[in-house]
Image (cartoon, rainbow, N blue to C red; front, side, top):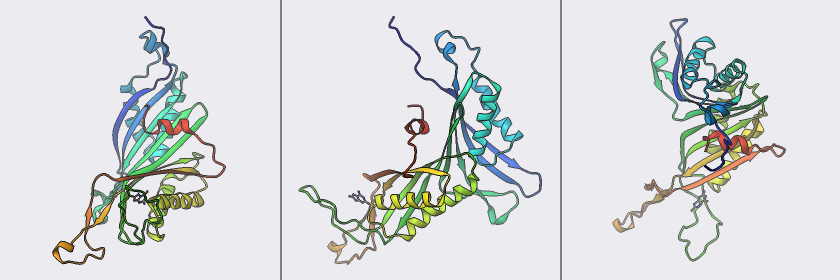
Amino acid sequence: MSAVKLTSNQYGKAENHVVRVYRDTPRHELRDLNVTSQLHGDFEAAHTEGDNGHVVATDTQKNTVFAKAKEEGVDSPERFLLTLAGHFTASFDWVTGGRWSAEEYGWSRIDGHDHSFFRSEPEVRTAVLVRDGADDQLVAGFYGLTVLKTTESGFVGYPKDKYTTLGETEDRILATDISTRWRYNTTDVDFDAVYRQVRGIILSTFTDHYSKALQHTLYQMGQNVIDAVDEIEEIRFSCPNKHHFVSDLSPFGLENPNEVFYAADRPYGLIEATIAREEATERPDVWAVVNGFC
Ligand SMILES: O=c1[nH]c(=O)c2[nH]c(=O)[nH]c2[nH]1
């Protein structure tokens, strides 16, 4: 047998879909979260010896998610993840940290109704907490916010070679699905308020500036978020450029001054960028586990 060693591990229960209803008054409230709990700590013997003495069952982790939703309530996804981390690290001394994540789906009242709701937010809100001893790293964000502007976007000045066919334009459609995550430099945040603020800044930047490229727009979004929110250290974007090509109607004797477009679904440009405070400490270890273990 080859000599091997356990170099890393984490485990828990994925995708605990918990809906917390507050019904203390006839006007109900709800939060809808999909929560994943994964523990870090001394689980060596479980892997090497089959000794489960330290293995807090994934079933127990699942139950804890639902019990804490009742006992502590669900304030924001970030606060709920901090509650879970606090519980597991305080309850089991060999649990030194973990990775807890949540997606949140947004609901609004139907015509202001007391207890009837519709899925109102196009985007999915995300949060990831990575705890390592005393170090808490919180990354929040969202994905799936699709935006489009019909003008005030162009793309000129790029290099041309023998393979270039794209024409320069100072008036095009710009459309994308915004995926973003930002890393907080503290856990002392009004997470719901900052979420609304960041979402608002990203949208108003998209509307308010002339985009010279999607890269230019993402950078400006990041700049504006970091300007406005002291608690955010860095922000990342991953955005497809959802190309809209002006349809050639000349065979039919029709002019087409940017009125009819072919919305191509693929291929698409994929533009990604991280914008950080000048003095930010980089945390590649945190980003490495934001999307998963590997
Ligand atoms: O905003 C854009 N960025 C690019 O890098 C690019 N490349 C391209 O063909 N079109 C665009 N648009």
